[in-house]
Structure formats: structure tokens, C-alpha cells
Amino acid sequence: MKQKIMVTGGCGYLGSHTIIALIESGKYEVISVDSCVRSTPETMGRVKAITGVNVKNYRVDVCDRESFFKVFEENPGITGIIHFAAYKAVGESVEQPLMYYRNNLGTMMNVLEACEKFRVKHLLFSSSAAVYGDIKKLPVNEQTPMGVANCPYAHTKQICEGMIQSELVANTEMNALILRYFNPVGAHPTGLNGELSPDKPNNLIPVIMHVASGVLPQMTVFGTDYDTRDGSCIRDYLHVCDIADAHVKAMDYLVESRNTERCEIFNLGSGNGLSVLEMLAAAEKVIGKKLNYVLGDRRPGDIPAIYSDSTRANELLGWHCRYDVTAMMESAWKWERFINS
Image 1 (cartoon, one colour):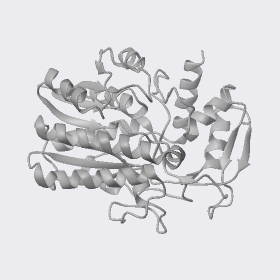
Image 2 (spheres, rainbow, N blue to C red):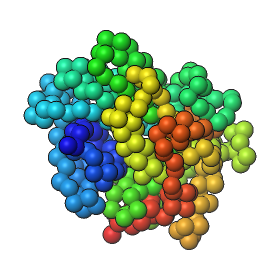
Image 3 (tube, rainbow, N blue to C red):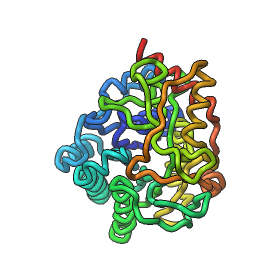
């Protein structure tokens, strides 16, 4: 019998790709909860086009406790939650910190309370490498201590992790995995699903692709005087389908009771850092033309460099990255042409 899994933020970039991977595993029945404030309701049509499965999305704000709980009442027997629903733009969190605290902590509160009330056994939390702060020693592993958060977004992730660990003391029926991932990029290999938001894109790859397709006239590289090999920020980029695969393997890990602790932490990254300028060069090679970008000042909240040691996920989850930077750019470019066709 398939396990029934709820994905919050299921119409979003990470959520939708994870839903596809859950369905394709053949082990899970999936429902989605997403208000579509930062995503689009048409996403589930794209999920059906890829999987052949019609996934129901409840257009509910996870911060709305009463409406959120009704989803559980209508869907008894939910055994796991994968919690993606959160605001995630670093710069916006600096400009509007209270909005980030209200949303990200409010959704976490309601998810944890729902787990307790409806006896949900398994929780995967979408955290971030941002919890490590400005790291001096690289690569980062799970024993690397949390640093001072560089932005309110990162601080909300730190607080949410603490909320989970505190709740597990009271809720002895639940186990949780905290997945700290680095920089998801790319799109589904079919080109039918990718990163899309009604708002102006903030992440590097969608901006690159918008410039390449002419949707944006140019882009800015924020900071060229960091202490890195070319002066631009270095990040650990990994394909969104690798992230999705990690969530399936993480849920398997909990469902099969392979965890040795009730709350475990895993880094998800490729282990290789690439700079913004290197990513631009990779995109230009795939797309076949020079991109229009300018060099600008540093952006508030950014750190110089961070990349992962993901040995723990490799060994315990059996997870490994399958897609390289060329595959990231090829899939993103295919998606860009699809949405602008």
C-alpha cells in the first residue's frame, strides 16, 4: 500500500519536482498544499503532463491554521509531510524581515501542530545552507556549527530547525529529517517544468535565462571584489531533479526506519563550488551566445563562498548527484524556450 504524503509548497519549484519524483518512485500517493502566492496553479497540469497523474492541490495558505487542518480532515491517513512552503529571497528578506518571520515561522508552527494532532509520523524540512552563515572553513559538513545568520531568511531557517528539535521532545511519535541544501538550479529534462514565479525572478539561473531569451535586457553580477578566484560569489549548484531524488530517498529512509536518531541532518550539494562568472560562462557555452551583464556592487546578505561535503547523504541515503553544470544549463534553457514559446 502506498504511503500518503503531503507536500506543502507543491506548486513551487522544488515542491513540484519532488512530487514528480515521488510519483515516479511508485511508492507514494501525493497531495499538495500551496496558496500559489509565489507559484502558479498551472504547475499541476505540467506535473500531469510528465507523470500522467492528476495531483490535487489545495489552494490553502499554510499559515491559515483552520484551513490547513481541514486538508488533513479530508485526507485521513497522511503519514508524511515534506515542508517546502516558505519565502526564500535573501534580498527581499532584508527589505521585509517581518513578512519573512510571519510566514516562515507561521507555516512551520502549523505543520508541527498538524503532525501532532493528526499523528503524522514522518517530516522532511526544506532547510538551507544559509544556516551556516559566513563560513571560514570549507567544505561545509553537518558538524559545521551554525553561524550568525546573514539575513532574516537564513534566521528563519535556523529558528525552524530549532522548532522541530524542540517539538520532537514532546511529540514522541514523529521523526524528522532536516535537509540543508545549497543552490538548486535547472529544470526537468523534458523541459516541461522548471522555476517559475509570478514575481520578478531573484535566483541566478532564471535571470540568466531571461536575459538569454530577451525577457530581460541585462543582468547584474552582484559583487566582483570577494576573496574568491574571480571575485564573484561561489556557490554549490545542483540540479533540481537531484534535489527531488534526495527527498524521495530521505522519505524512504524514514519510512523504512533506517534513522538512528529522531532528528537527523543532511547536507545536499555537489561538493563543488562554482562562481557566478563561471556559471555565466557555462550558460553562454550551452546557449551559444554572449550574455548581456554588468558588474555591480555586493548585495546585502550574500556571503563570499559556500559549498558542501555531502558524504553523509551519499553513504546513508544512497544519494548522489547525477547532473553536471552542462545538464543544469541545458534543462534550464529548454524550460525557458518552452515558457516563451
